[in-house]
Image 1 (cartoon, helix red, strand yellow):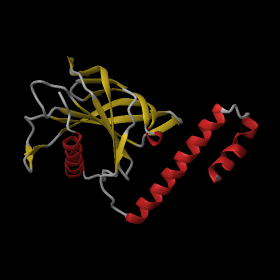
Image 2 (cartoon, one colour):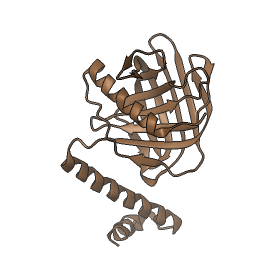
Image 3 (cartoon, helix red, strand yellow):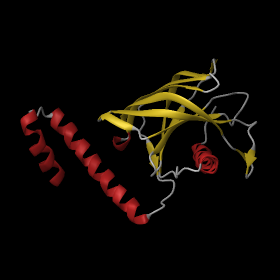
Image 4 (tube, helix red, strand yellow):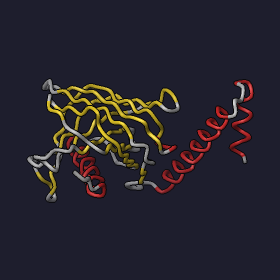
Length: 217
């Protein structure tokens, strides 16, 4: 099944709005990144599915999520999101997100403005992303979670190597957005210089000086 990412992106924004109303928390989405590949594992409540895309979203309040449109022949609106707060990067190419809720959308959900709204399940679990969004390359995303009803959700997604498409969904504060853009650009440059240092075999004692000089060029 071919996925229309414009539709998925709009649907995810609606997910965020519905979550604000239901949980009264700030989850305004400021960044949305989509990647293509395949799911070697995608299991929802003991039922197996396939997928060809995964999207990552982040909000200024710290909530993030991995959204997966399912290749479901019985439901072309079947989408799930592994959602959590305060993800962390343990290494340059490893990002971990503790899951505290699952967002579940299907054609049978109640509709708002003509589109199904998600049901939200309090959950526990973890997602791990291998790769880095700022360099636009992610190798894999793995998630496992279970909700209060005992339903289990498993995902292992492998990228096809295509560059990630990153887009800003909404700018709530132009000044803050400009600052975030500057910080992101500086982080990208730092990562590039670190990779160059690794490639050139720069010794640990010389790495800091090399990276600083590289970033100034």
